[in-house]
Amino acid sequence: MAELRIDRARLVEWASRAIETPSFTGSEQELAELVAQTFADMGLQVQWQQIEEGRANVLGTRPGSGGGPSLMFNGHLDTSYSGKEAWLAHVPGFQPRAFVEDGRLYGLGISNMKGALACYVEALRALDEAGIQLRGDVLIAAVSGEIEKSQWADAQGAEFRGYAAGTRYLVTHGGVADMCILGEPTASKLVLGHFGSLWLRISTQGDFIHTAFTEGKRDRNSILRMRDVLDAVLAWIPSWEGDASNSYRGTSAVVNVSGIDGGFGWRVSRTPHRTDLFLDVRVPPTKEMATARGEVLELVRTLERRFPEHGVEGEVYVTAPGAEIDEGHQLIAALDDAHAEVFGAPPERDVTRWFSDASALTRYGVPTVNYGTSTGLLDTVKGENLEIDGLAKTAEVYARAAMKICGVAG
Image (cartoon, rainbow, N blue to C red; front, side, top):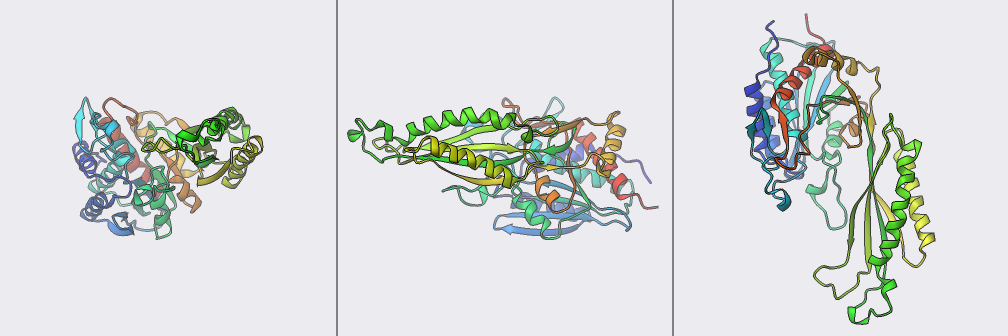
């Protein structure tokens, strides 16, 4: 059996190909085809899952000799941005063009999360080249539609179908394993749990009036009525964020006032009949979404009573639960050991408020931990990027973890 070796140049080459294959939510198929061909070239069993026109999942399986647990690596194909956004046009790392600078690989989707997909591929290639046969199966699931977005009103179609759309399809069509490593960018920390998302719309109603006839009727303007509601919502937010039932492992919940929609920019000679306010309410994995839904709708009822003339109404239109994994699970122990072998010390723990496909996986009986390389996602000067050394080390951790979890055949 040869020594386990990560080919950094090969890893960067495949990651660069993935970056340069656009895969905005709803249009993931071209990248899925690249992944499927890669899996076939590696000798994996390839399952193609056509979710809908223009988008698919790809599941590659490296069969084991038998007698060991199965391990899934899961990563999403879709990117947070398309590269066509006007406000990102000047940021090179938010474009589907790969480049290396100062030991870092830049390009749209590398952090979230084409870098992880590249690490999965390189981990299995390294195992093959070292002649390491595992007892358990290793699966790589490349899925569509993970990004936090949802259809609403006239925002319809595949590009708005996210929030684990692909992984929900995956787990109902054969894509299950004994456990899963999900390589979201976690700065090489083990994320033992993450919050879920609840999206709430609150609306006010008003009269549809021509400007010429608004004198003395300003109090009927739905936008100005929303001002009263927004002040009340801002006063409510600290109660949600400070509630002990909304805290998880010492991390408090958070609420974002994320959008407001009212009026017609092309016809400001009219006051709008309706104005909508949108909230993103983060919910700990220990709170049932039905409970959270009831609590935020009680806020809406309070607003209805407080402002009876404003026509307040509300709806919850996203409930994406959080996820957690037990500290004592064998997956955590395996990653602890593998990380320590590569980095020289065990990984730190973390809790995040972002959502991941661990939500769908854990609810289908697949214990999942988020563990990935360092993040450059928030670099608004140069865009998404990852340290190449971090990618190589993470790929090695994945390979070593697979050996520990699946077992090496004698």
